[in-house]
Every structure is written in C-alpha cells, then in structure tokens.
Image (cartoon, rainbow, N blue to C red; front, side, top):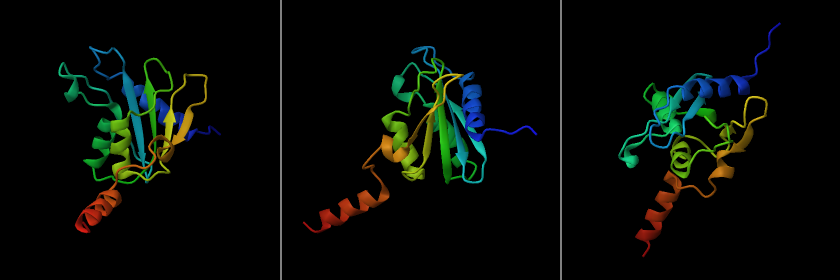
Length: 145
C-alpha cells in the first residue's frame, strides 16, 4: 500500500508553484502552498513588479486564492524558494497569515530535497502580533484618556 506523506505533499505543491514565479528583478523565486482546515490546498508564487512595492509574495497569493474561494481557516503552510534555503515568510506575510490563522499555524520551510523541512508555528515567527483584539484594546485605552 502506497502511503502518502502530507508534509512532503504540501512541500511538493509549493515547489510546483515555484515554477510559475515571476522574479525578473531579484531572481529569487518563491512558492507557497497553504492547506485549509478541510484539506484543500491553494498555491501561490511571487510576482515581482518593476515598482517593488507592487510585488506580490507567494504566501499572499496562496492566501488570496483560498480566501476568494471562501476559505478562512487554515492548518499549515509550506514555503520554498529556488535556493531551497529554508526561507521563512517575511514580516508582512506573517502579519497577513495572522489575520486568518492562530499562533498554532504550522509553517514548513523547505531545506532541500533530501532534508526535513524546518517547522515553526506562526506564534514563534510572529510573537505579540497585531490582531483585532489588540486594536480593540488600543481603542478602548484611547477612550479612557
């Protein structure tokens, strides 16, 4: 019986997405695959723009694909780069993930074909995140002044 490895399968989906990356400026291709609570997987790749601030990150593209199809509950995400260097989501992507995911979201970072991925939780990568709760607490504190 052929057993599948869900972690390796998610990494493979991220690696497949990597092939569609548009990175003519940095030449640093990134792919991501995010798994929803029901097991559906959405992928994304980085899409660079000559105006760097308009570039899209792979994690954002994957989340956008899922959210536009009604998914807002996620269990894990895998991230890879052409260098297979264990890249983690950047701060902006971490904050985007925090909008939809709790601190227990599993973040898998590709270390290469024959290496186990590095594994983090979103809470480890982004402690003390900005959230709806922190914004509401701040608004309440401002009202007390």
